[in-house]
Image 1 (cartoon, each protein chain N blue to C red):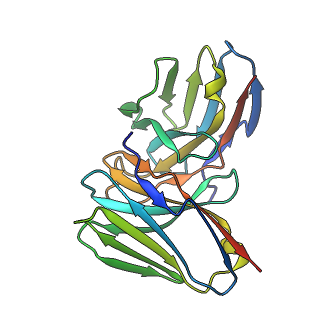
Image 2: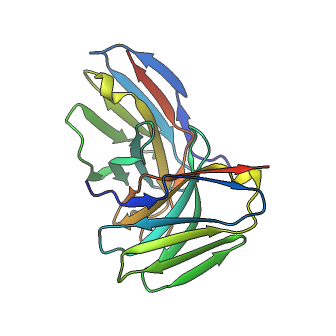
Image 3: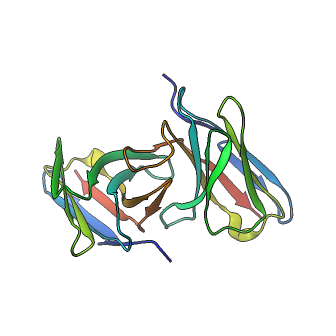
Length: 109
Length: 115
């Protein structure tokens, strides 16, 4: 399978804590993207980091990329109950995205 | 502006039947992609269409087919349904052909159950 792996598969934290999700990918990427999915619904794009970037911020989100290790991480700071969702990393390859297995995040109020 | 719209939202079929799923991209977007998401997994790429031509195909059997119309809307067809085809089928659109410059915009999906 071309799919990358995400770690952890599930994460449960309290509101206000930070959440870190890790992603390993398999191909030589042009970019790496992170998406969020609320239960059984469509995916929403969060952030895109290009292969020549090492870190990117968007609001409470911080993404890092290490192309030598083929890995990326997503940090959500000061989490809220509304952040409860599944988070996926995806390698951008030409016309398609190759998704990881996802991390299921639960933020308890 | 309306986002990506998909229909139907839910449907139930029996093994051996045929299904057609429909997708309308965001206005101005010329690329439509289809993904299959089995419960508990990440989405898997099925097809990409750009300017009405197939530009990419994932590792799916010939029972899966698709097309894109002049107004850039798209249909995904699955013949001879199997139990394993039960999944959330996601449509995504983008202005450009590739994902090298930007994100995909996803619809809410069509949930197919095969009995």
